[in-house]
Length: 310
Image 1 (cartoon, rainbow, N blue to C red):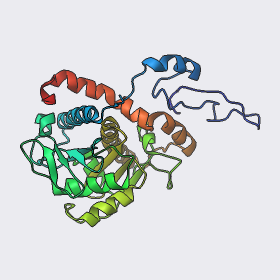
Image 2: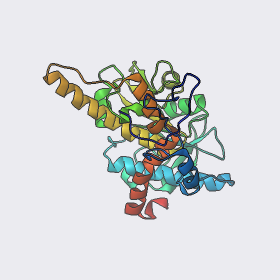
Image 3: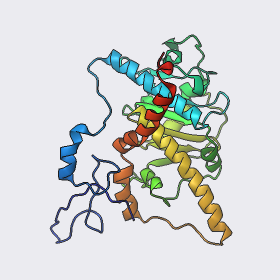
């Protein structure tokens, strides 16, 4: 069953309570707070954490660069590095046709804000740190995604082990856990917030391949790149990072569950559509993604101090 959530009780014209079978509807405002009514949430919301907003775009730029640097430190800590592969981008608020990205060959675990480079729509490095090397695949994929999706502020891709393994299977996730419900979206057709890109043409060095990936992603939050790895997006850096972490764990969970079920001669138990749609409204929204990432960012800031903000 879905987790308890912020709920409302709204009688319908047919005498039933609109929403889920148990008569409750999740709130998008207070993700992961079980049993909180809308009335109570309304009183608490002024103090509830949310992403900051800025009047000064240059101030926002420095803040986002700091969050992007923290994201790389988190990826490094979680073992998402594979040599020089992997990249996370954030759209520049001052010049939105450009984005900030990690320089090619600099360790995620050593990344500093001053290391980041800004890349324009032509793939030229226009400012940034002393290592001005751009991963061509990073530009081809991320430029295409940012260009196709004005709502995407950040995008993350790396060659994580379980995502990479799952992407060899040529299929998308089964909805078998509460966490996987974040990738179920009844408002998209097919009913999934996760796309499957079934082509592999080697390292993405061509603009057409980047555009094909962006087209496959569509309006979804993530895509499985066959024989390659995971790509996630978000309206914040935190959201993109959390969807990547969560998708990696969902891939791991399904690999384990499928193996265990096959060993018993059976299949995994799938969550039905109604329960998946209900749960998505609590765990799959942009706000939920941002809030779910907050503890990881808090920890990396505590562990790294101000050093990475240099």
